[in-house]
Length: 174
Image 1: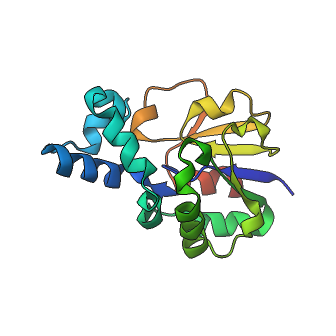
Image 2: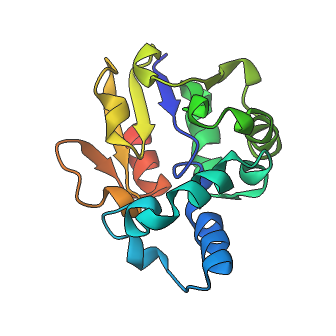
């Protein structure tokens, strides 16, 4: 049985709309996802890095994120024939543990919570595949990295890319 490790933020959980909404409300702007083409919000607005990190450090920030379209159905299908691990770099925002765990239990209750990995360096993960929006996690990962398309990584090359959960389904269940 092949092991698939799946990142949470911007792969399973749609973080960008909430992050943009908080920034726009606090700074009186109207940035959109299109404004992030090829960059993260902190790169678009470097003057607000502290505030942007503050939003992510809020213990409840990750609790009410929307589920990425198709994620639940495809992960449930994959779960039938693959060992699934959810791998989130939670050490970057340690206050997120409870919210992320509760979010996963609510939206992915069919997964065993013993397969939820809260880590920093994903190179420690022993899996055949890692689906992630951040290519830096592939550098020390020994399996196959699949780059999940997100506005910030649109210009990243050198990795096999999946644009949606439909693409993930096709990749594994063809």
